[in-house]
Image 1 (cartoon, chains in turn cyan, purple, orange):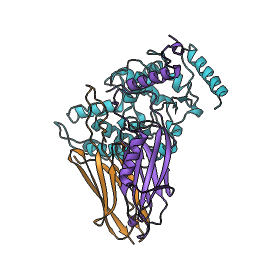
Image 2 (image 1 turned 45 degrees about the vertical axis):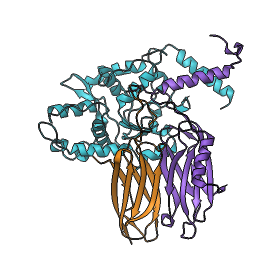
Image 3 (image 1 turned 90 degrees about the horizontal axis):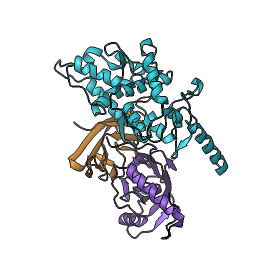
Length: 262
Length: 162
Length: 107
């Protein structure tokens, strides 16, 4: 890129960032694409090979947990749900879903813990624990290749709107919103790396930066603290609303979990 | 903000920016200690430890690594050596070195004629943009090498310690 | 609990065919340079050696340094000589030890 073109792009970028907008323009449906497409060939190869994808080690953990009897009820997930390959097919592609009990959306991690506490009568699994990541990876794998299908339930509409507001709101020391990077400037470079559209279709993700699997909430907290704003606690309604909005925004994109990301 | 160019001690603006960025980088990477880094000299010493006084010729070895890696924590790399891999003519070992990680050694693999192909792939950590060198020892005792320059970017948004 | 590992060995090969073996094992590969939440240095904890044998005979060995990424991946090649077992052994700091095996049928 020539210096002139670089300066021009910077100016355009600066103008975009400086413009006061109540709601940023969403990415047109035909331009939406998985963050996979912005990765280099080596990272893509890491994701594509199940025997080379480190996320698959978590899947093995999850498979073992699925079949392990636990809790005061001494039940395993398999005892109620059977073979995950059949029973859990497509489930992860539909979460977060509406929980009539809570009266609000519930994500996959919280849903698993509901089963743990109510059905297995076991202690809930901690966020980002090997066990919870393994189970979510194992379940998400059962939706691999299927299109994301979140948000059809009308009861979710106000929560999708709340998530969208969070996505568009400026926050933190640099007064930046998610939308300014991920809607307005995806594909441009930030510190040498391309800005992705930020779709959650690969979660839980093996992030090279973490050298481990991690959840979408971990990534969101990472982004928010990177923006020099205060991240929401794990399990906070803001995080779930954001997860819901992001999945709704990605609807139709194929699930890729466990994905590999830089 | 004072104009550092006007500084009497002669600190140039470039030095100030470099120092600030390094400090900011150090603060952002709060989870990484700052040990003494390897230098091209310690890398040469590590190579000599493997090779002894023998001459190292450039050639036969090929490092396949992305020139700009997406994350220095996990860099996929493939090293191959052009060799018939027969009992009479094969690769005995391949060693990989780096110049800017705290330690110069990365991996050493030991092969033999049963390998069929003198090639292996792994994933390595690179702390900064640097040169990496692969040295292969053949069955006739000769040493061959290849080097590659790698640019390492860090994640744009570094995480707080959990 | 033994560390999880994923092994890819072709189940069948022709005699003399060169086959690729891929291995992936769960391990934090803690370099010893990271600092924890309390400011303390997290001690080194890495895999140091990997060995592969084919019907008991060593065909590949690797010495890992701290610069190998977490959850070490290693792929290499061998010539399919006879039907049997390809065995893998990892060992490292803090008495870490893991073994895996895969069968291979050679026609």
